[in-house]
Length: 234
Image (cartoon, rainbow, N blue to C red):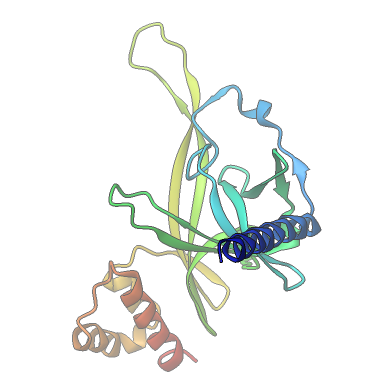
């Protein structure tokens, strides 16, 4: 019996290692190029929105429709790039080879993780490029609500006399609504929802009241946008 248990354990470990290896091997299909960290040397802070040392188990959605799971990834918000680790090396995936990436991240002390679904393919002339990644809150037939997780470079002038000005990375998060190929900033206020379909303002008000919607709750936002999309926009 002891030998049987040992055998089962060895088979399980072997199968898991084979599965992990196949996933890492598959990621090679999306390509990759080495990162150049030296270009950030003169800028304080991190170009990675969730932190330089924050690696997350991600699921990659490739441009040709494949799904590759359990890949250690991190997000460079300055260059809008997804990076992954393989054989001790860090590689950048060409955005043209990806449709998106899913991952969980916890920024709260309680350890609660939030799921992010980064996708590209959105396009608004002069505003959004198809290769740029956005976290999707809602995507429907007529409208989409997306979040931009960006790291920007800013100049800091110290208050101390004689101290030199320096450059610093700062996280910048913005939410956008796309309706009929038009892009607008969105702050999840009641008037932002009313402006989606101004002629249907009374109906949107009714839905908010009837369903006791909290417009700071992502699930409630999704519910209201889906209602507007399917019933009030043509």
